[in-house]
Image (cartoon, rainbow, N blue to C red; front, top):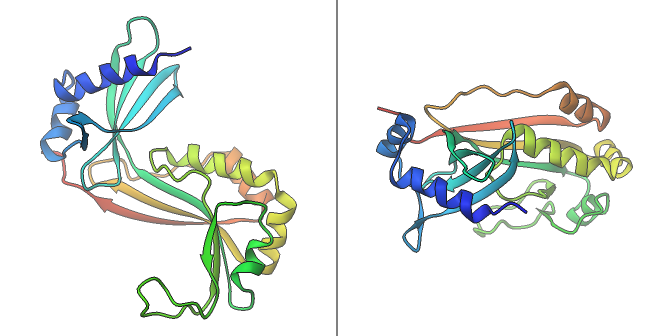
Length: 217
């Protein structure tokens, strides 16, 4: 069993006493969020690419993450430090004819959110002009886009018949909300596997990107 505490401890040390120049550059323009005076961990990926471990940390007042990448083994080493965009990835469906209960009846999931046409929003100032249902199985935003999207698609494929019926009876698509660091790579890549899975479910993709943070000096 992997001792995650060991990797987190080494990652925290890199943030407290940086050995990489890029770590120093990041910490000059952003502040790591603390919990009990210790950098707050957003996620530990014990099976990151190239047989490594990635520890994600929250950034104060931001929705992207600083990530410390470490080698696996008895004596882990920091390999690199980078910024991961924050991602929300979820299935959503809207309709002017169907209510929330009717839309949600197509989805065999418990953690659904949404509203019905005619409902009043939380502020009490607006009446919804359409119904909506959404399904977001992974709420944690500390994931790469492809990783999170693939996890959602695999989940939806287990109920592919229901998803196709939802698509036939509403405006259904995958929604992506991306909070990207201003000095990070702006590109988005979707491999053929993901594209084929989207196509087989007849799902469209909608991407909203928000650029935030202070540029590296």
